[in-house]
Image: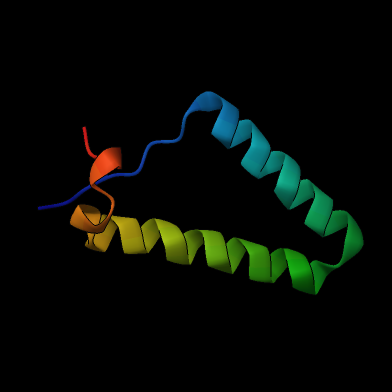
Length: 56
């Protein structure tokens, strides 16, 4: 089964603001931040039962 991850609008805004903050300080830090976000999203997609409060 394929799962998707949806962000609350406020969480999406915070994510974009955080990404911008990292990008303004260091391209390497920004790359690592994005890598970690993508890793976390993929972890949730692969193992949704680890995050039961997030499943709808």
